[in-house]
Length: 350
Image (cartoon, rainbow, N blue to C red; front, top):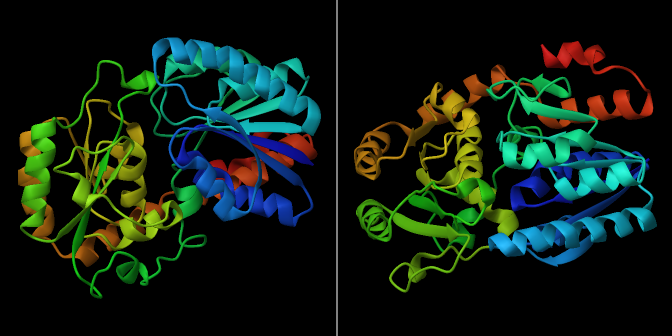
């Protein structure tokens, strides 16, 4: 089987990497395609995958419109040369369009419900897999499963935190530290939404620094007063840092959810509500707020609790979910190689 996987965010590479390795071990050929937005190519190279870069990601509205045409064309010709049997993506418009033009199937994973993107890829997509907590009804192509994308790569079967992390960060063993994640606010779904103000960011770092070391990971360049806190480890090691952190404060939903799945207490600061982060709040792992003042009270409350309690909550969460990589592998095998219906996956999907 020949599979083309398109990614538009570092988290998408993580979502599909174990699935891709598994298909490669079974004799399939897998090609990744990507735009250069953050550190997608570094992650792809770290995994040793075959890939094709389409160049820089566009941030402006007009750039995104031009990119829709440019990347559609690049995806079509890449598909023409690679001849995939199946396109897979996290809601990629380009993969959906190319699959349709080449007479191939496109399987999409979706967890955000961003309809401005969904309406552009849904007509050209065979099936849309979504977490069961996603409130949006995406129509007859939608198939729900019990899990989140982040479980696909952070489930204990696939991820073991490395205590060498402390050395990578220049810390003493078990020295407490915090991770702060800042986003660029350039995505289409970010329009009209907000997170921390610049003043809030400085206050947040000062507050956390009273208790521990602080490391910032950011999609955009940091202001001079925050630059000294920028984390300095390889992108593929970030999940180890999230796992051992005492607390994570994030404007981005992906890292907030990743930390929650790892059993790290997390504050998600964003006016965009994400159903999977809200679900993790039920387990006492991710605390959702758009009120920057509430953040400081939450920090005191979280740091006053036993760190092991959050790991126990993570175990309770995973007991209610499927192993997402295993689910995807079986779904793809049954639907696209054995030509069976997705309902035959009821043992995983119920």
